Length: 437
Image (tube, rainbow, N blue to C red; front, side, top):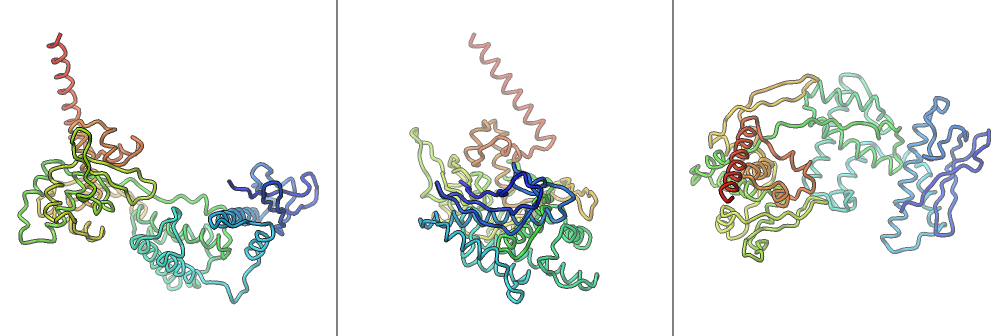
């Protein structure tokens, strides 16, 4: 439980009062001066923050500092607790002194130097992700991609706007919006791509604030990461049959991609978990039914289990129980080639925002297939086969029906067929009941 709090010495004074940080040690407590004063009438005693009043022109900076001080204090307490060491008032005061003492000018770390150090620390395991997990190569690459984008943005500002190199203090709400504008109109990125770069930048700025290299206003907490719902697809059983009947005897690469794709289509597992599909994870129920159960890599994901499909068995036999390994990036390229070769070229409509305008395109279906299409195909085809939703969710690992329903990718014709099939089943059930009477 967080024990850090703030208070003023005199709550009814008409003069500025010092803001003190307090931390409780059971019956004892540390009272530590933040060095910042505020008029009690400008202090929100409920939220322990400076009120949103025009009289306090630097309220955003003060509140950001207090927020960072709270995070730091609680993180120190958690670190000592994890080490099973006693945190004393003297130790906490020393930690706070080191935190609040501003670094010398020559020791100030540059924006991109900090970014690179963050990446290196993630690679080495010195810095862990929020779930206390070591960053995988895919996560590291995301940060490097974001850093490259920001360096391009810096060069653009230097060349086109005659601006100086980027520093931490440059990152105001105005510059944040300039970066979004650059990604939107100069780079012509789609909304979800822009959101990706926003997310990485926000993480870096918050890390710098925690390291006391950067003071940021409340605007960073309020920024909205841009996102739009993509046009997701699934492959029906007829399309899967087209892929299955392809002669790939002369193309071992696509043959392996097909096998892996079918693993996803007939288990419903994520691509990160396909490597766990092995004979070691095959179990039997009390009635003798075979199923696969895995422990997912994704943080906080539930353990999915799915009935063992004959196609999965034949693929495992083909590779002596050890599936081939391929990066998700390469897989998403090759699976499009596979589906194109199978003739899955029906036109689908995509709608997205680019350069600030809505654009609607007709593209071949194979161009939209990714590793996630396999998972969506499993869920949707099982649903069309009238498998109850709560049972499909056991296979996909979804814990809420709301999130699961996002995976059902029925177009208009698919929805009509599903309704017709449901009505036929209901009609059959009624006939059976009437007949039994």
